[in-house]
Every structure is written in C-alpha cells, then in structure tokens.
Length: 56
Figure: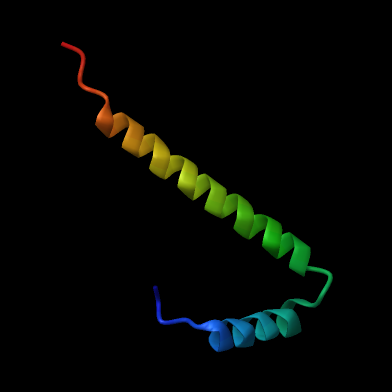
C-alpha cells in the first residue's frame, strides 16, 4: 500500500510507545478505530448515493 512492511510498522509502534507512554495507547487505538469506521461509513454512503437513480 504505502511500502510499509512489518518491520517498519513495529518501529513506528515502538516510537509511539516511547513518546506517548503505555497509559495513552488504548486512547490512541480507540481514536484510530473510530476514525477508520467513520471513513468506511462515509465511503459506503457515497457509493449508495451514486447507485440510486435520480428521481424524475
């Protein structure tokens, strides 16, 4: 996708752990999950609007 493999992802996660601390990780995960869910929801909404024929 972006050329990020497992080793790079592990390095990023270690840096986030060092910067934020272990107490903040659940909050980051929750925020990331809700952002991804919202993005997917909007994508599906846009696709549904494109499929419906216009009312005449």
